[in-house]
Each structure stands twice: as structure tokens, then as C-alpha cells.
Length: 486
View 1 (cartoon, rainbow, N blue to C red):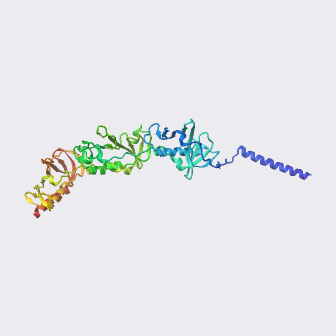
View 2: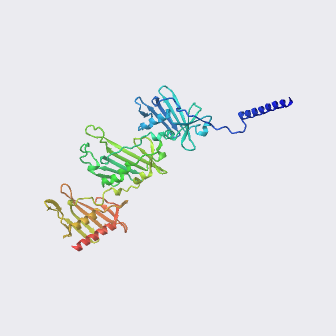
């Protein structure tokens, strides 16, 4: 009997001890809390349809996006947005009401998951007056999901990285950043202003338009050609080269990451005084013309400071600051206007050349063209009958010499300088205009150094360009060779 008493007493003590341990664990102690336990996912955080949404407010440290859905189901920016990607916004709405939920966590410390405060907040307003506020936190360690929760809900959910990124990068993805394309042949005016340099201003010559849809008298590149307004006032511009070296690189620039929704503080991006300001005005041939006059449109892109591999960029018409990769901007920053401006001698058809005088190195060469018509198998052809100082030379030899002359190019620009010495060389072209009137154009060459001549035309007092001495010396030797062989 005594043994049975001790057995009952032992069981009682054991049970009491277990109870004490259990209470100690429940009350606290130094043990770690149990980690949050994953629960079976709920398929929807809200029981809504995208069509019920009337407003979105998406906020983070960079600003707020405000979107509203009108009665036709189209999304519009309630503030600054004017170009919106409707498909991206519809995807945002669908993701909100029916996201792919991987897991649900309970009993979590919100701050540990980036949810207090949240990295991004999405406020959604419904037509019936209801409101849902979604908090988006950190990405999971494996980089596959984001932690999110609905305000007022104790659960934390894991949503896919794709869905989370749509919200985290919403302000970049919903803005359509495509700049309009225009036909370079419809260019009216162009300007490039590089910080600290004289602006390049170019305008087409006026001529009767021949492009379908353009009224007579409208200027455009394809028919009229271009003229430099600044800094080389009055100098002709090669339209094809200008398009190749300026228009095409500029129109190929693509706006990438969005740097700021606001354009209130452009000085932060170097856009108040841009590193490069590109301006094109062109005929909008697609617009409805009034009184047979088509309206013009402006294409303007400002390039600001460099940040890493990107320049800040602002396109007039899309009121946000973007980034553009440096590789797209570099060709325009390294622009050499001599690559698309006229050469030393205007390209003139041989049939319009009357004579050429080359003077220098104690020699004068008078080249005369005695134009005539010959019949080749019943087809009229031009016969130029060239002579140098009265000596007939072969036509092929003159053509080679003429190509050397018109191939003389400006290679560098210098500060305007008034020559103090007499020119070493001069070249005079006498050409016929459309009315068969004769005009003389003379270029003067002054010693600059052992490699270059400084050049000016007869209408200019100062020299501004340099051209190769080697090219001119080679031309003189060729003339000497021609005469020696005749």
C-alpha cells in the first residue's frame, strides 16, 4: 500500500514539472520565437474585378503615379502623364485583384520584410467607394518573390517577382517614351547647340515643293538643299551628309530608364543648360491642312549630365526626365560640322565650268574649256576640249585634275584671323549660272604651318579653315606632269 502511494505521488510530481515547463515556455524565457509558419495560399487577396477600379495611386520615394479609368475603360494620367501604355496599366489592375500568390505567412515582424514602412504603396479605389491599400516589401532571398500585405490584413503574402516588378517599376513601364519619327526630306529648320560652343543653325533653301502633299513654295531638304546659318553663315550644307551624321543618329536615340516624373528641377540633371540641345522643325504631312498650308511640328531633345553609362534626356512633349545610353549620344557630341558642310569648291558640273585659274609657286595655269557638242552613235555628248595655257590636253587628264580640285576639303576650323601676308596660292573658278551668266569665285591660300594652308574666299576678310598643303602640292605636280607629257 505504501509503495502504491509513492507511485501516485511520483506521477503527480512529474505532471506538475511538465506543466511548469509548458508555462515557462508560454510566458517567455530566453528561447527564440518560432519562425512564421507558411500557410496554404489564398488565391485572391481581394474579391474584386479590374473593371471595378476607378483610381490607382502608386507611391514610393521617387514620387506618385495617379491613374484614372474613364467610362470607356481607358486609363488616363490624372496629372502629368500624356502618353500611357494601356496594356501595361491593364496588367497592373489584373495583378492587383488576382495576383499569383505563392505562399502566406502569419505572425511576422513587418519591418524585417520591408513592410513597415513599405518600399512601395499601391492605393486602389473602387466604383462602390471601397479602398484597398497594398504594401510591397523586400524581395525574398532567392530573388523570386516579393513580400506584400493588404493594409488591415495580418497576413503577409509572397507574390511573383514579375508581378512585384510591375509595381516597383510602374512609373517607368507605363510611360510611352517613343519619340515621333519624321521624314528628313520634310525638314524645315535644324539647330544643334552644344554647351559652351557656338550653335549650329541650318535652314533649307526655299524652292517649289515636289513631294506629294506639300504645297508649292514649302521648303524641304530633298528639293531645295540646306544652308548653314551659324556658324558658317551662307555656306551650303550637304543634305545627305547632314542626314547621315545628324538626323539619323538623333532620331535613333532611345529613351530608356525614367529618372524623374517631374521636370520642375532640371538643373539637377544638367538640363536647364543642356550639354546638347537638338532641334528639328519639320512639315507634318499627315496633318489636315487648312488653306493648303500644312502645319509644322517641332522635335526637340535636350541631353543633360552624364551619370554612369547614361545621359539624362528630356524630349519636349513627354514631361519626364529619362536616361539615354552614352553610345547613342556620343556621335552627336563628337560632331564635326566640316563633315557635312560644303567643300572648298562647290561641286559644279563640268558642263557649267568656263575656265579655272591656278596661281602659285611662281606659276600661273589658265585652264580653258571649249565646250562643244559631238555626236556619238546618234547621241549628243559634251565635248570640253580642255587646254592649259593654250596647250591642248587629254580630256581624261583634265577630269582627273578637276576631281582633285573639287576634292579639296576643309580639314580644321580655327579662330577667325585676318591674314597679314599675301596668299601663296589662289584658285579661281569661272562658271555659268542657269541664265548662262558667267560668275567668278576665288579662294586664297595662306601659309599656316608646314602641314596646312589657311583659306578664305574672296567674300571673306578673315581665314577660318585649314586645308592640307600636301593635297595642293600634289595637284600642282600633276599639272606640271600633264604639260610635260603633252
